[in-house]
Length: 34
Image (cartoon, rainbow, N blue to C red; front, side, top):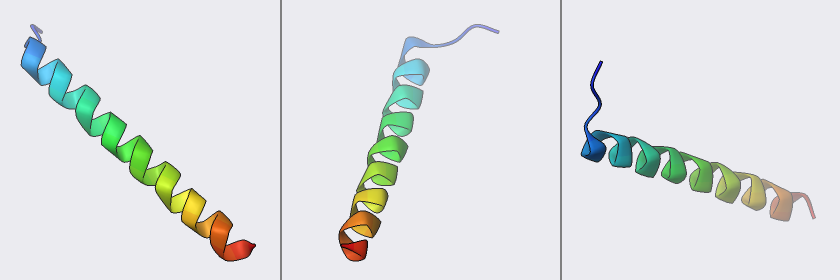
């Protein structure tokens, strides 16, 4: 399979967004626990 550079960039961006949203969610939960 040949991957497009733009497709790869898009995937990385999506993964980054998912990770940041996960971190934000855990931070919010942590703040709620305190």
